[in-house]
Length: 351
Figure 1 (tube, rainbow, N blue to C red):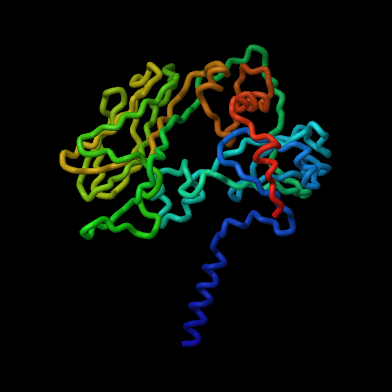
Figure 2: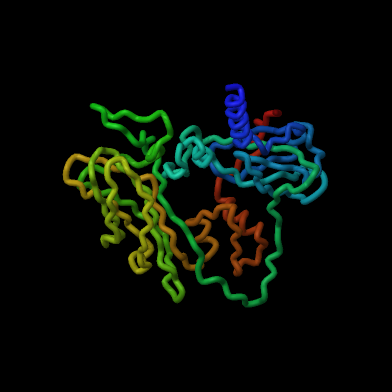
């Protein structure tokens, strides 16, 4: 018996040691300055705020920023050495999303919408000083191009609808009434309101500027949907009045559907995506998200700043721009509200 218990405890100990607690990024020999961001925007920490914390003379190259266990690239107004009175640290701050919630689901695929957090929109950022280096940076880069260079004719763009109308309870066992598991289960999370029997929900995706020239790939419509009643059902997917798919999704099942849609279907720049519940008896289904991945014509930077949002995880280079990559990046995001040292970033807490 003692030998059996020893083996069980040894196995359990190995299992515990293999777990990730999402605090592996912390260096307990460092001081972290904590502040909160509740909406996505360009953020700036001024030298005066840093001086108030006693780190105003820290060389710019030693600053390091963290969010949800991942290092965030920052731009410093001087690349190295202490910051002057007018210098700053700048970065694109992103509100909290649902990606940290994924580990709470029994099966990761059951999370159908990770755009919104189930807990809070506010996320904590942690600023620290790391003299060892390897601190991520956004750097100004000269846009040295051959005179008369031809711009790319298109780029890939995803436009989507990410529902946040209610927190759907997910899979249920019908025992007189609906009984839900305490686990984070399939279909649980932010969704649309219910689509009843023989009802249709339409979402209009606009300002698409589709590329229709030679070499254009077929656009893809991605749809995450779920059932909310103990009924067999089918639903259809249409774009601008033409049906492109019919799907079986019975009971409390969910689907991640990928539908090919010809670019001619929305050549006019608008795609009315319609989902119809084909059931004729009392029924309920809902949508978690809709995304259209397509090729977009190269257009002026002014129009890009109005209609498109580029994730900072991508490097966007527009060959017609005479500016540096950093200059283009700043123009994309300067249209967003900026958090300055007088608001959220001044509320830094020492940890």
